[in-house]
Length: 605
Image (cartoon, rainbow, N blue to C red):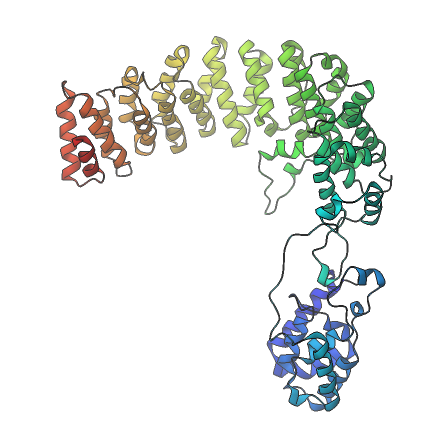
């Protein structure tokens, strides 16, 4: 009996709310309905399970006719709620509202004593002696964490046989407890206790898991697998737990089996690799890609959830386990090669995002084979090209040369309607043009392309400005991007100053001057100011010129500018920049810029 969880409960609650909103109009109708259907008494959202009906009766009782009031009193006096006659099991569980008459007492408590008959008054006082004084009003809605049906302290003292009995008893994840015990959990919460104890004593509970009945809730095996994954447990025992889970519940426990097998550093026996092959290619999870599903209002889930979606699937987890194994031992490449050939054609893009991780591990030992597998992989979804491991594989291939296969991939990205894919294509086109002569055309196309492509170019140019062999290429593009029509492109280009070595910024005078004369200064000055602030050496005299231009923009950080001007003056008192610094200090004082006074005090020291 759990009316609270049913649609009937919701309907009853809404109906009583309507009656309560207009008690004078609906008093008799509501009273007669309660008399005909007393199950409606069980309606409340607070610690008092009848609180809603109590509020309704309090509102209507003075408006209903005398005869209807007497009918309602008669029904209340004779009513016994289902949970007031608990079974022996429920009595052992310690239900709070399990005394006969509790519902009658609650409902009678809201009726004025002047409206109660002599017999009703006597019965109410009898119940009051049993239950105590009634609450003045319904209590607030309680809440809390769902707890384990057996506390961790008690579970720690249980024998193995007692654990097996508990596992057999608590099989449902969310048991249907009645109201007072609604925070008492089931298999899910008890399994968390089992996991905690397994971490403390992995040998004992790993062996215990081998005796869990086949028809038990698989969540117990899941928790044990999760616990032993990163514990110093005998390899044979780990494999035995995996074998047990694979035999009894491979569909449910697949992710956790893969985690354990992928964590084993010793060479795996053929039986273990067979498990991984099945998990990586035959497991049904996932059936669909969650990141492609409708998240409401016609929107899909965030794009960076492709990897997250993949790692929360059994085949994706198996791909990560294979990646880990190959990364640590190249001999696994040959053992898993047939599996990898099947994995690159997986129907799920989320899974393939982790297959790419396995191919990256192959590249670590055998670049040619890894790239060959990657170029054969199904990349039918544009968004897959933006995931981290796919991006790494493309960049890795770019360092070896700019092949026609790579050109086709990057051109496809540049033409994608997805802005994020297009931006990634701009990055890759720029990297290719920066290091390969035969890619100059595609890099120039990105520089002249749409805002997303130009944003990708700005990222590459800004990130590599401090690399000597790429400096000239980056400067040429930044001089263009500083005046780009798109605000985001200009702002991204301004990040370049954070990548210049702080002891070499004076050699970038031409770039700094061009920036100060560009549209990017209005919103990107902070990057240059921060680079000058963080410079540990002697500031270049051009700092004066930078501060002059920055002060012309009211959005600039004048506290930082004041510090830079005083520092420049201090370091250039004997050259031509001294007078220019003093002119700026005068300007700060005359215009009342904040921070000047504290800089004077610091300078005087």
